[in-house]
Length: 249
Length: 265
Image (cartoon, rainbow over all chains, first blue to last red; front, side, top):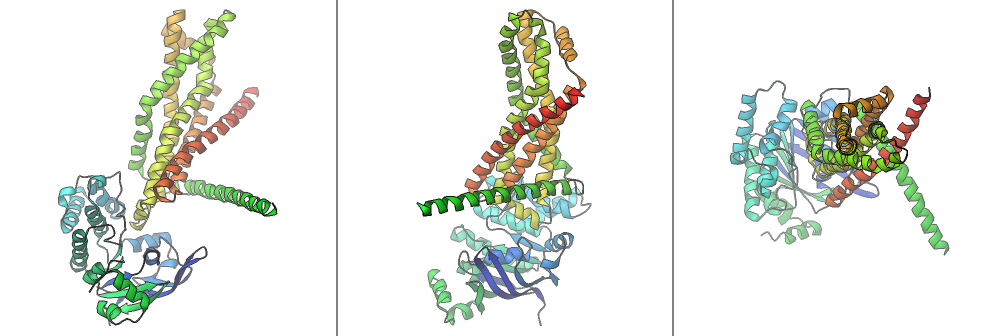
């Protein structure tokens, strides 16, 4: 049986009167790409933000790499965070730093006694992995949307995470750049042996990158399985309408 | 009519509630600063970068304003003193006015506009573009990196800028006095320092430390708590300036009372 790297049981989260997650159960297995689909505002991003401790759940349990996140102190949580890569929807590159400084930022703070040569080697190697070595001295404002996404992913890869969490990796990008990002997600999964959760509402991205899909509707997972299982055979009208809206055949 | 009164009352209650919620949140923010400032990791490189941004980048504006303040104040004071034939008291009068009040106040107000708004806007835009979250998930304490370094830099640099403004304003005053009264530089500065006491200089510097802390912490607080996208960033920058200026005037008043108390001892 495959090892579970993330285990979520009965997770609930509300903001004021708004119940966003109403008892979510989810497993992520070692080495797989799990796509979480759902409409905007359905709580997909909230779910992965709870996984890295940016938000806390109201109820339920969440184990990441065997650790219950809500019970961890800040030191232990930071140690866990080093093993999780989080790619933000808007890339979240530090505007005042060059690409090199952006990539060095997590390194210099978390790898004690790292030398300049080793630092340069790591930065160059992740930039080569995402195919953007030529941008090393550029500022984030000089990069295109797709490039920013790639650099955002590269910044998370520099600490060689075991788990990757992608928040809407293809949002706001043209179809060709979307395909490049999809390929990169698969490449990262193979090259860095990561397990990933990809949050998206883009069905092309889901089909290309996902080993398994989970559909989040009204705060609970209403369908789960491989792409065909979820969309071809599901009788749930919300799942069907989601499929129809994306015009995928 | 009764409905209107009820709506008005509930609106007023919400405002009062929001005021106290804001006050509690500001208190927690300041308390967190004092909790985190003592312990490592120390973001020394970021502190130096911020000192440069706050100090060096403010020099042109501070120089110009300080010089103009010196010239204008001297020019405006001359006729009143001339009525009593006391224009020779100009250096003493100006030194007391500049060192005790105008130097720290003018510098702090300019820094509140320039530094406070830039800190508020920078941190605010980092907040709304999730850069602060990105720091947190890369196991870096964003409060320490962004807030502690900026507040310390502003607390440290404002007194330095105040000393510089005092000097430039006195030079502006000398320029004016020299033109009208033909006083030499050494005579001017001898009169300036004769008029000052140890309490004047220490109170001015201590006051500047408080002003610097206020500018830094208000800018960071407003930026760190900004919401609602780019509109929120604009509001954060704007309210950082308004709140810092308001607090600076209150602090100036308190500092005056405290200094007067010590002067009477």
